[in-house]
Image 1 (cartoon, rainbow, N blue to C red):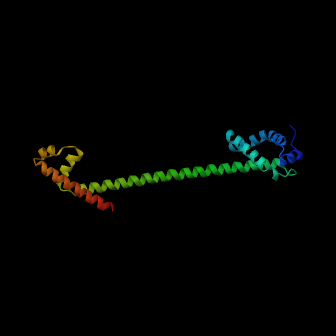
Image 2 (cartoon, rainbow, N blue to C red; image 1 turned 90 degrees about the horizontal axis):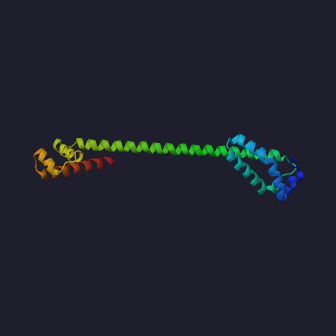
Length: 179
C-alpha cells in the first residue's frame, strides 16, 4: 500500500471515508506495534489505536495535510499511553488508600473491643466474691438459679437478687466508662 500523501489527507479533512479507510489501513499495523510496545497489552493497544483513529475522524477538519501526519499519529498514541499509565497509577494509589483505611478501621475496632472487654473485666473484679461467683456460675457455666442455690446452699431468691445487683453494677460501671 502506498504512503498516504497530502492529497489523501486533504480528502480525509473533507470527510472522504474511502480516504480515511486508506489512511487507517496504512497506519493500523505500525500503530498497533508501537502502542503494544508501550503498553505490553495487545487488547488495550487495539482499543487505544481505535480510539485515536476515532478522534482523528471526529477532528478531521483540524488536520493539516501539509504537516507530518506520521509524527502527529504516534505522538497522539504516546500521549494516550502515558495518560493510561497515569490512570493506572492513580487507581493503584486509590486502592492502596482504601486498603489502608480498612486496615486502620479494623485496628480501631479491635482496640475498642479490647478496651470494652477490659472495662467489663474491671467491673466484674470490683464485685464482691460471692456476687462474682454467682455471676460466673450463671454466665460462664450456664447454671440455673436453682442449681446455683443448691451448690452454694443459699435460697434461689438470694441468687436472683445477687445476679440482678451484679448486672446492675456492671451496666452502670461500663456505661459510665464509655461516656
